[in-house]
Length: 99
Image (cartoon, rainbow, N blue to C red; front, side, top):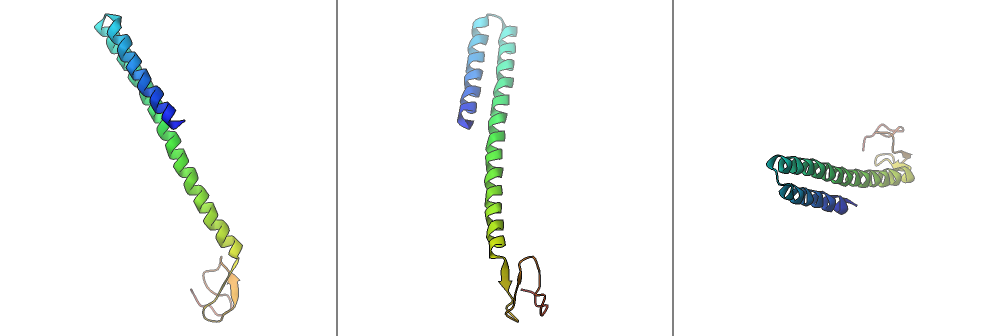
């Protein structure tokens, strides 16, 4: 999909250049090139947005995996008193030791 947006953008720019050349007037040429350029910029921007969205979704899925791993483990063992406690705590509730 992203590659298709880039290809369409380039095709619009080329077609607008060809139409502008065959229009016969310099002003119509400039209008054609300007319109093609704007359309090309829009298609390129949409492609970039989709790329960024893919990157963000990938990062979020990796974060969710890490979070699931931590939650599935559920408990950690204190290295001082060897008692188990939740990962939510920053120190052992039994002896106060910080890992």
